Length: 241
Ligand SMILES: [Zn+2]
Ligand SMILES: [Zn+2]
Image 1 (cartoon, rainbow, N blue to C red):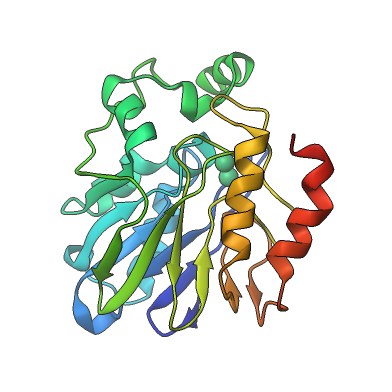
Image 2: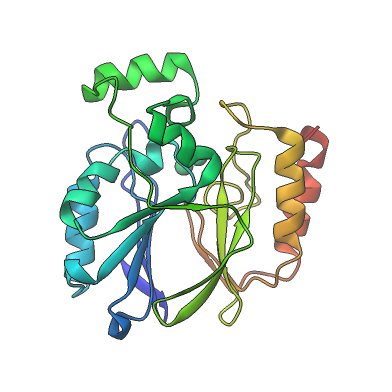
């Protein structure tokens, strides 16, 4: 748990046999208008909420939870986080928001085998992932939140409604599971994934000037080398057809 930039805090995931996504808290604490980006795996909400409280953040100052996408390792503990921050809205890209509102959990589990495994492992009810979404994002929005400005970029491919958040002053990119450190990219074999779209999304992110890369898992990167995302895309291009 640490501040990676003024107004950006990092709470690392605690991977079990299934990964637990990182959480980022964005917004200047003085603004009392903070956002949590992603929740994490089922059962990890208590640790995440406690970590956020230890930052000295008042629960009432958390105004929204923004999901980069709705895979189980990101949304599994959303209900736990909502309980800890009851005033927070839920913002999700429209394509995955529409599924959540219908209780369609295909984008959460990604594949049937994983669904039955997780339902028995975590004792999840069939309707565990029905949520009301307060704001449906589409990409292209400029969010003026927490005394910062974040651009929303729709980056499908890993999931259909994946988004990145980009802060141009600090050159900070939160890409969900689309691109990681160590020249890694997200998988593209689950429900709603599309290799060609993932390539387009990586090309789009490659146009950005990025100094701080804050992915959904593994290392975070400060002082990102110029052309890092372009180089990563080039390496993976043969597989992204
Ligand atoms: Zn994912
Ligand atoms: Zn993930």
